[in-house]
Image (cartoon, rainbow, N blue to C red; front, side):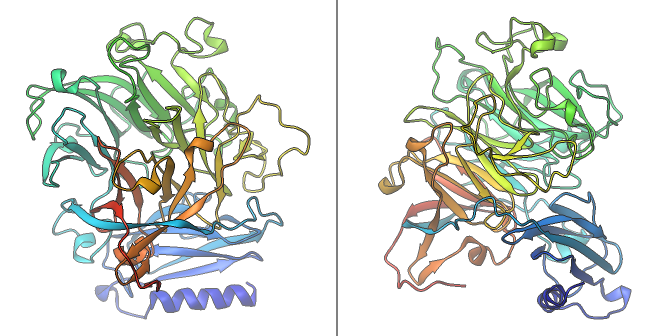
Length: 551
C-alpha cells in the first residue's frame, strides 16, 4: 500500500473512530484503500461500533484520472461500486483504486447562477422493525423512499413508494397514510440486499380516477412459479421481478381494497439491474396514439460483468432495454398484456427484435420521466459501470450504447469494463445514440433521475432538467430545451439557500450519504426524497441569504 493510501486509510479510520471493543459492545469497521490510484469510500451509517446485524452501505468513489477496481476483501459483489454489508463481526473492507490515466469529463461541474430553497413537506414513517438492531443503532435509511408520483385524479394526492414494500398515499396538504403493504400479499417479497431490490416502482393508470388501476414492480426470491421473461443467454436464476396490476374498488379511498393481477415475471441472476421504473406518458389523452401504453425500464441483470455481454445490447433481448406494452391487450407473451401499435419491432421477426422492445442498449436504466412542455420527450437515466453516469433522450428503435459504450466512451464488453477508451476521433456514426448529458465519478457515484421543471413557483427554473447524485445528494440542472442527440449539455449544480447561507442536502440530512431520489406533483413542482431520514422536501423560491456556506 502506498503512503498516500495509508494516510487516506488513517483519515477514514479517524472519521469512523473505530475502537477495540468487546463483541457484546458492538463490532468495528475498518476501511482500507489499496493500489496506486486515488479514491475514497463513503460509509452510512458512520458509527464508532455497530450492533450485530446492522446493515452498512459502502460506496467507492474514484478521484480524477483514477478508477475503482473492486473490493479486494470484505464486500461483494466485487465490482459493484455501492454494496451493503452486515455487521456480524469486526470487519475490514479493502477497496482497490488504480490510475486510469484518463478523465472522461475533465471539466468540473460549477455552481449555477440559480439558487432554490427547500422546505420540509412530509415525513414518511420508518419502515424499520422497531426492535431490529438497525433501528436500535439509528441505522439509516429510515424509509427507503424512491418515488413520488401524482395520481392525476383531481385530488392532488400522490403515491410514495418505500422499497421495503409499503405504498403510501400523500394528500395535497402533506398528510401521509399507508395505502398498500405488498409484504402482506407477496410471501416471497425481498428487499435484500437493498439498492434496487424491493418495491422498485409503481405507475398510476391515466384513467385511475374511473378504473382505480395502478401497477407495481417488486422483487421476489426465486423458487415460485417460473417467469416467461428470461435473459437471452442462460444464467442462474436468483430473483424474480414481478409486474402487477392492482384495481381499487374505490379509487378515492386512502387505503387499498381490491384485486390484483400478475402481468409479467422477469427472471434474473441477481436482485440488481432488473425491472426498474415504469410509467405512462402524462402528455397523452384518450384517443391519442399510445394512450395507455406502459413503459418498463429493464436493466442488464448484471449479465455483462458476469461475462454474458452477448445477452444485452440487442433488440431481441428483454434485458438492458426500455419496453412498451399495453396492459389492456392480450397478444403479448403469456397473453397477459398486448403489444401497442407503433412499437418499432412489432411486426418483424423475433430474431430482428422482440415486439415489446422500444429502445435498447442500457446498463441499469433507473428512472424515467417525460417533459410535460417543450418537445415532450421521454428521458431515461442510466447508472454507469465504472466511470460515467448518463441521461438519455429515448426514441423508438435506437441502441443507446451499452455494452459497447459507457456514456460516449468506448467499452470492451469482453474485457476490462472499468477502462473505457476515448470516443472516436472521427465523426460519430449514429448506430449508437449518445446521451444528452454525462458526468463522471468525480461528481456523482450514481445518477438520480429527475424531471424537467414546468411548475409555476420558481419561474427561473422552468425548462431545466433537475436531477442529482444518489449518494452525496448533490442536485444538478441542465437546460432541457437544448437537449439533442449528438451533443452534451452543460451541467451546473443547483445551489440550496437558507436564511443563514448556502447549504447542501447532505448537511440538512446530517449524513454523508443521502440516498437522494426525486418526485413531482401534478402541477410540475419538484421534491427531494431522502431515504436516510425519510423526509420529503419541496423546492421553493430561495429566500435572501447571508451568502455563507453551511457545512
